[in-house]
Amino acid sequence: MNTKRFAAFVVTFNRAEILMDTIHKIMSQTLPPEKLLVIDNGSTDETRQKLDELYPEVAYIKMGYNAGPAGGDKVGLETLAKEGYQWIFWGDDNDPPPTPDTFEKLVHLGETFGDRCGQVGMVGSRFNKFTGLLQRATNEELRTNSFIEVDTIGGGQCKIVNAKSIRDGILTEPKLFFGFEDLDFDLSQKEAGYKILVHSDLFLGCRERWNRMRVENTVARKKDEKVLWRDYYSIRNALFIMKKHRHYLAFLSILLVSFGKSLLSFKHGLRYGSLVMKNTCKAVRDYGLRRYYKQAI
Image 1 (cartoon, rainbow, N blue to C red):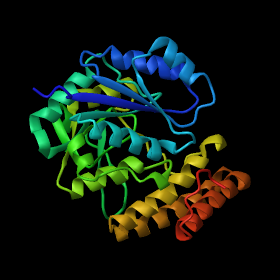
Image 2 (tube, helix red, strand yellow):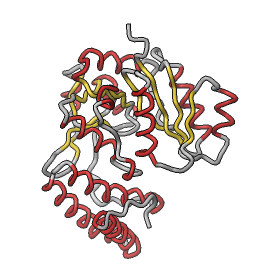
Image 3 (cartoon, rainbow, N blue to C red):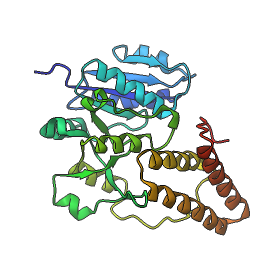
Image 4 (spheres, rainbow, N blue to C red):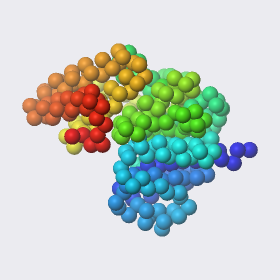
């Protein structure tokens, strides 16, 4: 029997209280991880103090700087794979498993397929290599199958990775810092012949819980200006990923769609449209100049 069946890591940054709640939910699972590792992206709050006080058994690595999700994920995956664990939960500090048996259901699904399965999760999408867009599975498909195969499982969707793929050299790209590092990883798994599976009951449960049984068209919707910085990383990194995986039509599509959305954003006012267009131009410029800043400037 493999005594190193399942481990987990969580990347955190200055969210001590949220992290403690997430750890509690992880360790309360019907299948808790045999080892839990916290990757601290340079927190300046009381994260380490609270861990020592409440969860001294949890392993801890402090990066010493903010490596972003991409850098922290790489360290977590590499560390636990080298220690010989078979399945690794890839987590963020504010995305705990939503049900008490989430891990148990997902690990069982992965083990059913063995080495052919690269990862399992709750919610996933198919990838259109011509447009670069993600395609949503239908509710009917989920209701008629116990699991479905997808091309990517996003962050926060209880990604549990087969460590064999890590030992095969598939890892996140640290320079991406934030945004789509999981898509890059997943496309690499698919290219290596691994299956990516999602659990249908958990998937439907998430849609019901988040009121996502139907999705409205949100083209060029107005976003809070405080989160526009995310689009910088999304555009820059998506261009990198499409080029890396040789999806050249998707590369062109993302360019056109990004500038198209920027133009449409002017319907929300000159100031807002200018902010969106400036963000898009910076992202494209920095991709072209191979500038992988850790903040949108």
